[in-house]
Image 1 (cartoon, helix red, strand yellow):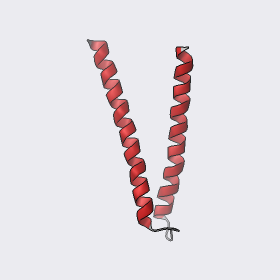
Image 2: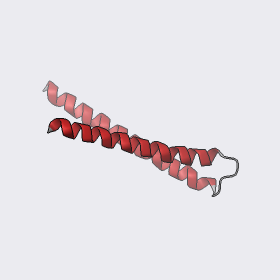
Image 3: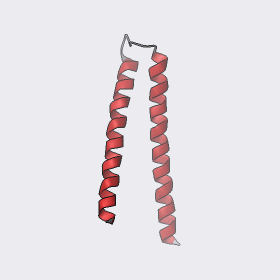
Length: 74
């Protein structure tokens, strides 16, 4: 049962990362194009929010790993 949960978690995280990459590729590509269809500010804000979401996920992952490693040491 635990192995199934690990596989599901890994699949979910891989899917989330893939979707994130697709959106970021779109936002950055439109931001760097010479004639974007909308104002560049929109793509700059959405790309910034995308990177903020990535930073929050990484920070949560680091905090979880630190808590787990400190629990093992005690």
